[in-house]
Length: 361
Image (tube, rainbow, N blue to C red; front, side):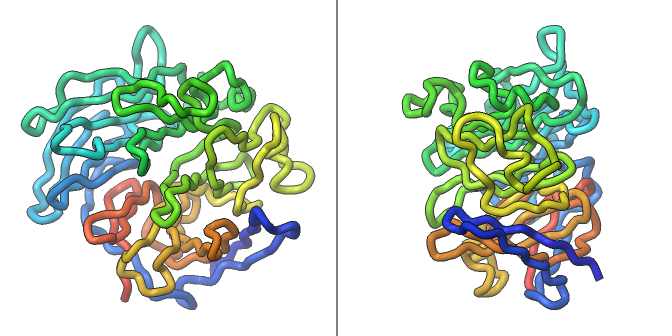
């Protein structure tokens, strides 16, 4: 029987609580059902009108569209120069909130450009099913190692595009406020401009970020929640607020008391709402609002893990701050990666071979 311990820290708690996660057989009867298989590393996806899944292939640079009704699968565009080594590659995708009236498609990719490797946010126009008129909205230097590139992008309830950019495998970047991009969560307008109400007058929404593969907005509060990988300790779930520092920086260590040991740099570091002292490789996150997984799941969130493939359900208190967690699917068949809410509120996630739906049995 696989078990793990999650350490929960709430914003109003002064003590640390330990929670042994329940195995899936003892919890809610939830399982993963594959809806699209045989794909080539679909590490990020989103949904468009007509039950269409837009997904990216990590290493090929392809953006593809899969019709859930007909099983038709076709190419939208191939992004040139994508480097898929390690954690690099095609890492994020989003559609404009007013798509298809505004037929704009956004992707995040690590690619060769301007004589070096860059992490970029690119925007394409959908011209009768093909991507045209590529525009670069963000371009920042990728690290010399193929790790800590971030890549999650999504539009918020405010209509702005949010993105998480990793620290490029250099923890000092996360606290360098003159570096707008690396080790940050950024917020830009759909055309790439800087919103006038951003806290620092530039793209930065929050800093002190290490390496994140997921974030989502709580539909009850519109607050942003982020999942973040630690080093050899302290995978985290953070409640992100504009202008705050989330503590990752050059003094990080797995010695000493968690989670302060990896959240001690810079001014007024904010501690995570939940952390796993023993890392799981936490990945995507999605919120349940009528997700057909039973009344206990309504208002909860679901997260994934690249290390053991577990799907974990996250419960919130009435104030939507302090949280607890337990695994509900402990063997979905592989690493669980990106999580999204699909048509009808159903929750989907990708693995390296396909896209799956969470269903109740």
